[in-house]
Amino acid sequence: MTQFFTDPKYTIETERLILRPPREEDFPARAEMAQDEETMRFIGGVTEPAITWRSFAAGVGHWQIRGYGFFSVIEKSTGDWIGGVGPHSPHLWPELEVGWSIIRSHWGQGFAKEAAIASINWTFEHLKWPQVTHMIAPDNTGSAALAKSLGSKPLREIDELPGYGGVKIVIWGQSKSDWTARNKTT
Image (cartoon, rainbow, N blue to C red; front, top):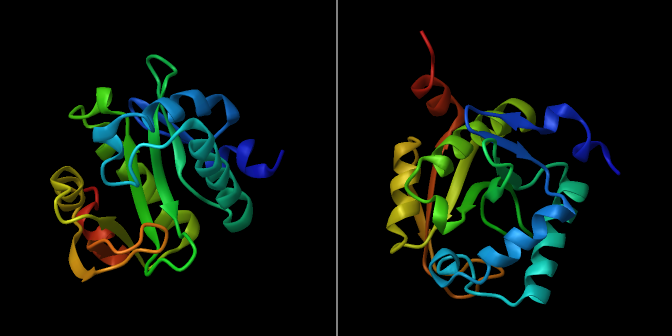
């Protein structure tokens, strides 16, 4: 097993969450999430377990190849997997992204924002990215609201996203300096 899955610097703890690299034990919950139409509406649609496995394994591979990826989001109080959040850069994507997906039963409770903040902090600290972006469909009002609450702004629109085909996407984002200034503690 590679260092990502055992080195504590790849695990983040927040008040209610643990973010860590994905493990095989996370797959059943991920496969269940992939069956929920509303949750999957903007991230490729519902997928059967075999296709979800390929996507899940690609996420683990992203960690192996690039040294980072979506963290599994674990709710501390239950130990349950509740989603994936983190930095990634899929092949041919126009920008480096910090993205998120949380199971629907946990929407509206601040988990996505809590995990996104921790992940963005980790990304700027460990990966030294100059900015983060979020690829969001124009009618994905929930993700747009989250991006705005994180301090990101719409940067530009694109008409195609590799892996998703001809879809309109708004690229939201902010620089590390904007993030740092906005989140400075006194």
